[in-house]
Structures are given as structure tokens and as C-alpha cells.
Image 1 (cartoon, rainbow, N blue to C red):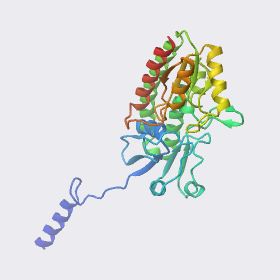
Image 2 (image 1 turned 45 degrees about the horizontal axis):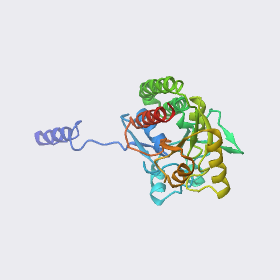
Image 3 (image 1 turned 135 degrees about the vertical axis):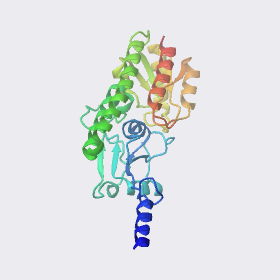
Image 4 (image 1 turned 120 degrees about the vertical axis):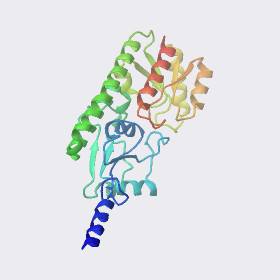
Length: 289
């Protein structure tokens, strides 16, 4: 009898918390489609017990205009229990079978936001506006709280802390850009209408309507003429794409080249969105003062 009790005691000791025999829970996986959604999700859900945050596209993939799902992406999606998308039509590459899986919670971060439409095309670059990105963070946190009510308070607290930092960024950008002398800019592609609207800038022209698609000879001539007649001498390129076309235009017109980052790639850090936007602010101040 005594030996039986010893065996029972040894089993209980082996199963106590902290022992090697403790049962581990498989974390629930939340997938963000690409970089800006991933950075926001890291701030909202990072550190929440039993939750794993993953990005679908690589952090250096850039914007998703021509993105195609890989075998690795399909494997990631197969493990997802919640999927955070920017929405506004950006993730058209997602296949129906990837979205129709039973039990998959899809969170559209742009739901409820009034979207800009030009030429019948919806502009999806909502996150480039700090004000609208704050709304996206709110939306993500609320949806995650409904999906995972056990951790609802933590999602809310994390989102509130991040939003306070975004509000400070927004205030700094607003006060600085209101005081610049020049408010007309030429951007690399159609990534900045929401940003320009928020900070009272005017996009006088666009170098490439679609990134990677060089302007035609007629479009190039029209842009050069615009620069010469309007007096806009600031061309903004994006770090994700070659600046060859902008360099040619600058050589023809005497315009200067600066960089604006649409925050579609970069370091994997909870501070990344704010850091990249602060760099944009410094570059705009340098270009427009």
C-alpha cells in the first residue's frame, strides 16, 4: 500500500505547474495581411497570453497591388483563426477558398471609413493617414475583443496606449505641416491622397499611376510641362521603388527629389509606423520650407 501511495505522489509531483509534464496550449493565431496591419496588430495583440501574431506577406514585400499568394502563404492562412485585412479592395489577391474556411474570423480594418474614389477606382491606402489609421486600430481592437472576449480588456488597453502615441504623432505632424510655405507636391504613385487631405497638402501630379508601370511619353511630357508652369519643384519618390523616372524628370526641370514612405515595408518593431512617419515629417519639412 505504501508503495502505491509513493507512486501516486510521484505522478502528482510530475504533473504540478512548472514540471516537464505540464500540458501546453497551442496559441491562437491572428494573421495580418501585410506590414502596416502587422505593426498595428503587434501593438494591439502582442503579449496577449495564448495569442500569436503573424504577417502573411513578408515585411519587405511592399504594397500589395500585384501580390500573389505563395504556398507558404496558404500554409499560414490554414493555421489562422483570425485574419486582419486592410480592406478597401487592397487584398484582392486573397482566394475565396482561403477566406471561406469555417471558423475563420475576418476583420476589415477599413470598415466604416469613407473611402476616396478617383476614376472609378477606390484608393485603399487608408493607413497612410494617421487619423484614419487610428480608426483602423480602434476597429481591430473592438473586433478582436468580440472574437476573444477573455482578453477583451487587454486588447482595449493595448490599443488605447498605442492610440495615445499615434495622437501625439498626428498632433506634431499637423502643427508642423500647417506652417510650411509650399503645399503642392508631386508624389511617386497614388499612395498619399488620404495623407495629403489630412495635412492640407495638394497633390499636383503623380509620377507613376501604378508603381512599376513607367509613364508613357505623353504622360511624361505632361508632367514635365506641369512642373515648369506650376512652379512645383518637389518630387517625392518611395523607398520601395526605383527613382529612375523621377531622376529623369528632375534633370529636365530642375526639380528636387525627396522621399516619402507609404509605410508598406520596414523593420519589424512596434515603433515602426511612428518612426517612419516621423521620417516623412522631417523630409516634408525639409522639402517644403
